[in-house]
Length: 248
Ligand SMILES: *Cc1c(COP(=O)(O)O)cnc(C)c1O
Image 1 (cartoon, rainbow, N blue to C red):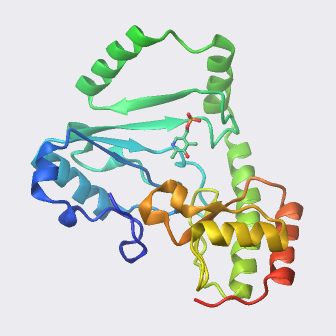
Image 2 (spheres, rainbow, N blue to C red; image 1 turned 180 degrees about the vertical axis):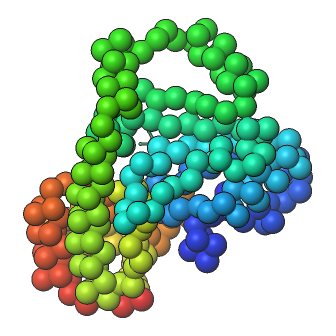
């Protein structure tokens, strides 16, 4: 589904052709969103649930960034919306909240029939996760959550360096409420690939070309704030010095 800036990077259910909707079996949603940093409100999930009910589509919500949010914003769980458990399940993971990316442990919750089918399928294609990883995840989930808060404060600081830095060069970006990504349009005269190349050559900074995330990502790039703030500040300084003001 195309995610456009005009629609706040949320899918437009009304724009999905009837024949496609009727054929669809499963729909994946992901908010807070990677790569756009967009978030979804209750109204959006209500629409999604109504759409899933109407066309008998299984809704799968990927909520990997549920804990990575700033300044008091609390991402919703899809399952807190009335009717959600009739149509879908939610996935999450310790990857982002507990700095356990690559440790490969997460969970699925929601509609009991779907969870049962998923469980039956999973037990036939693999075996349980390495026990030490399970124990580490349990410590993360059961322990004090102040490390999550502290992490979010680190990401917020880095986010502000990137957004303020780009905006000083001519962008007009809002600060994402959640995730550790900044999704920005490329300046006039560039596409995603040519801009990424330009930034590497001019400033020695790597940004991710948006077209790698699908056709709708063309014309955008993503900055990931998974480096220390000093390094991020240096990247923005170099961009400012070597690229200067940009136009759209
Ligand atoms: C990081 C991420 C995940 C988590 O994946 P793991 O396999 O648990 O590390 C899921 N969805 C999105 C969109 C992500 O960015």
